Length: 98
Image 1 (cartoon, rainbow, N blue to C red):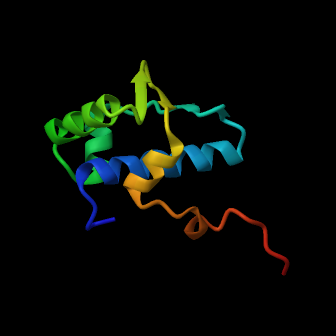
Image 2: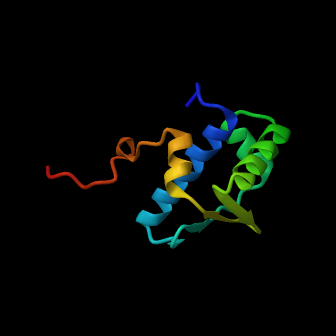
């Protein structure tokens, strides 16, 4: 993820959080609660709060997400995951026989 732009890094985080929450039944269609402040998200991504805010605005403006009151709605999974270069196989979400 270190080579991704701030927009792509944020998109990647949102894709991963969505899938992890979906596995445990904490999503509704393409939305999920993300009760983190922008300062916390910026720290997670290793960027400034200003840069995070600009990235959030960019994802909203391009119609990839909407976010309000701690809820994120993914408007276009395909475009968001493409921007993020997201490949869910690294999460090992499938139970494999032992």
